Image 1: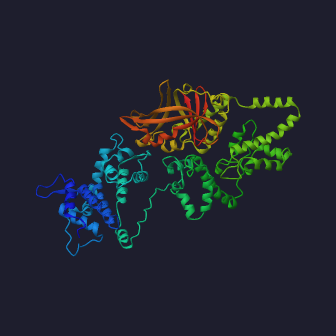
Image 2 (image 1 turned 90 degrees about the horizontal axis):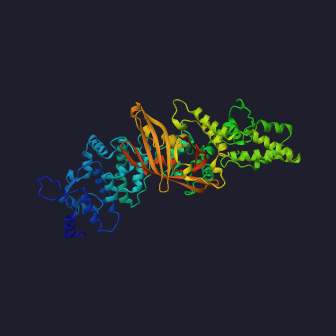
Image 3 (image 1 turned 120 degrees about the vertical axis):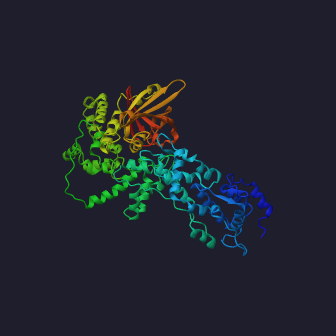
Length: 635
């Protein structure tokens, strides 16, 4: 048909590299699969894009799959060229213009090469490839080393058959080595290659439909790994489904098993879900994504729907909760004692009935029901449970009630007011008492079999520590409360022992690096943070102890980097704050050194607010989730 001239054909053949390892019995030049694909592309450039291109793409994908499975493919000239021309000019298979199609040998047919491969041989070849590219000390494979594997470089950079986003999708969906969030073992590597091959498989029926109906191919639905929250807290669930920016959008929420079941069974309406999602706290930089705090708000709002149903149909004969006295305790502590943990630590009218002094004031007529109702309605409510007070709202209510009696005291004279203030100051625990109480409680919750730093602490213990820390932050010993905000780097230099954290990421990884769970009989043994500050350098170093049985095999993992002290404004409260910003550089353990930007788990301490500082004690809070605490004691 003269759509391809012999001169053009010869030019393409001569330009293609020839197969270097040819049996001497063959007298003709031969090409391998890469040269074969080059000839396809050269011929393809002569023709306009159309339906015929589907056959070429299919042949390319099949040929590439043979290469990715380790098959060696060599093709002779007489077999390639007629087949190439036929594929470009006639999508249908069979004879060309009534003549017999040239026969292609099994060695020249990529599909035949795949069918002839034995599965055990394929797996053995992949195992050999894994052993050459993995870290020899841990026998694990990082994202960067997999990306630099010659087969991946070929399909992404040279053949452009796999995009970077597809590679990242396959990496995220592949199960990581136990105890590690970003390293593959051999099973994970094999699974990755199976998923990679699946991208290059086209169903015959779909291709036939493309030829007959000339319809666009429907996009494939990405498979996702579902996550169940059974036996885990909302914070851990968040860390499992969050994206690489540690945020959760509606796409990530599709991985939450129980949420999808509720939507499918219409126990939760889509309108209800969308309403909760819109009200929850979003990231200031990605407006359609939830922070960890926002995710917990969403979780609590959904949970409250079913608690309301339980309250309507539940057993009303259960024993009432004990009464709580607010005498000699600050309002924040009183709130923690009467708050409903099931509703995200909020206080409603039912919870207020447990406050001894308030009930006495109501019974004695010192506070009218109408006054209480008015003050309750004016106080700040939870964004997810509108009839419940947050801690800030409870303190507003507490102060409004207190103001009623302060007005009476003002009328009785300045002397009585001054006397009341002195008595109040005398009743307040000393700063040292509050600090020692926090240290004692942290030590108390640390069981002999528990992981250090409170990683095994339950939610009640976390809430109590959060409340005590909040009180300590208001004391006069806190250098951060200095109105000049005159914290300098030298105030922080030295070695600091992490004694407690409520970080969901550290709980999930069971440490900072997650290495403790990667070694047999290994576990996290503690963390020391060291700050160095001079005129020329600002260095930070984490030293994480990894305990291994026997103890002689225990070792230290270190993370080094740069740090800086910054004055900023809180994105949540709008108030001035001091940030400690850290840029990790390298993670090192034994003979292994890895760039820290590939180590997701260490990011949890990159940007934190300095909430409390004295000469030997420091409290850091999450910049996006202030309920996340890191408490250090200076060594």
